[in-house]
Each structure stands twice: as structure tokens, then as C-alpha cells.
Length: 324
Image 1: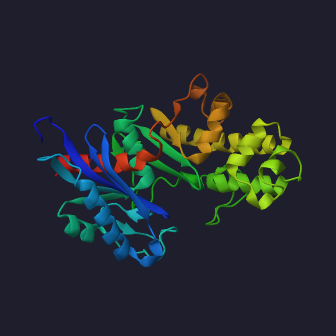
Image 2 (image 1 turned 60 degrees about the horizontal axis):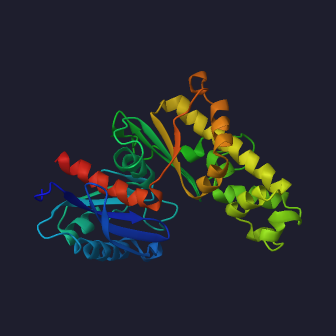
Image 3 (image 1 turned 60 degrees about the vertical axis):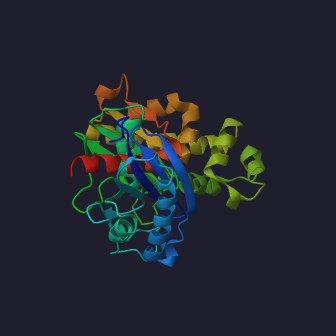
């Protein structure tokens, strides 16, 4: 370690649209932030080479003599964490059966560890969020999709092939809307940002605040518009928001019942709308949870924002380096 006892890790975050990098110290402080388009259609080798350059740029901000333990990568999946090999990733075209772990390690001359973004977000919450030291924590992101990360007895739960945490496909309303992979009535198909917008479009009347926000064009409706219109008194939007709270309550209640976590943390773009009526969301979760949760539920919204993936990637590197 440095004389101050501080360690450093390079952290990367790969999404379907953008990828980011930073140098992160063991207290969670970031320097050397950078972001570029992912362009996954160019292939995994091209992306790996560009990500390596982004990480190298972040590396240059490290103090002289800093101990750099390795590289942590947070990525959309599914993938096998041990090898970083992708398994039919829907947003990373053509990457199935491939990994960038060896090429990144060679380019940077550092050990590289790769994990699923939601799982690493959960890990970040146990180290840098409001629940430092939590041994049993669930992180759920509700945004374009719905995903989850699970920490149980202080370990990341990844499943037999790295696919654990697909909480977006919990059934919340059988016979309702399907997600893009065809799961009937699942959490993602009924409470993600696109799902909220789709339901509102189907109920669109062409009048009221929702119509005004969308310029009269239902195709332009977004989930943010739905929450804004509901707050402005639009009855259609209010009905969609009520349904969203119920669907989210069913999904989160199921997770509490199954995993009994110390903390259930939610993040993502839709959560910004849900937070406007936090008490209503809490009541919905309680209504679909076991009696032991009726007085209080361990539900919080993340404070880490978009940094949660980079912090999770860094924590993965710190954690794995200690085990070498």
C-alpha cells in the first residue's frame, strides 16, 4: 500500500450505449473519469481495445507510487463471471461466447475481474452506500429494464452460470404485458420505463396534462412524462402510476419474502418518479410482504446514482485482490 494505506483500482462500466472508466481509491474517491460510445456492433475486440485506452487514461491520474491492485469491469450481461464470457447478451450484439478478459489483462498488465452490473451495484452498496457492512442485501434497478443483484452472507450470488439476479422476470401480473424476451406478466414487462410509457399510450385520450407534455402525440410519451402528468392531476397518468406502484410493490415484496435481506435498495430512472410518493410505494411493498414486514420494511433508494456501477467494479477488484 501507499504510505497512507490507500489502494487503487481501475474501474470500467460497459453498457449497450456507453462505457465509462475511472481510477477509484479504497475510500470510493474517483479520478480520471472518462466516457465513450460502446458501439458493440464493432465487435468485442474493438470495444476491448478502446476500453483499454480509456482505462489507461484514468490510470495516469494515480499518485506516484500508488498501489494499483487490478481492474474491475461492470458490464451488462448475462455472462460467466469467472471467465467474463458472454451468454447471449441482448444489448451487446455478436458477443455471445466471447470474452475481453485476456486482452484487457494483456493490454494493461494487470489482473482483470468482470462481473454483472447489477450484482456489482449490490456489492457497491455494501461498501460505499447507506448499508456499509451489510451481509444480506438486494439491489434492484428499475429503468429501461429491471435487473437485480444479490449479496447473501457477504457473497455475491451469481448462480450456476452467472445468470442469478434476473429479478425483472418475476411474475407480478399473469396475463398482462410481456417483456421483450416473452415472459408473461413479469416485473420488467409491467413496471420498467418502457412498460409504463406503453401502458400510458394504450390509455391515451388525447386530452389533459399527459397530452400536453407529449405534444398530442402518444408515441412521444415517456415514463417521466407519466409521473409529471400524474402530479399535474391527469387521471390517465394517475391510474398508470397507481398500477406501477402496485406492480413494483408485488415484485419488491416477493424479494423480501424470498431473501429476507437487511436492505433492499432500488435505483434507476423510474425510481426518481417513485420517490415522489415514497409512502405509497412503501405501503404497496408492505401489502405484498409477509407479516414481519408490516411495521417496517428495509427499503431505501440508492444515493450512489450512476456511480454505483464503477464503484461496484472497483470493489470487485479490491475484494478479489485480497483473495489472491
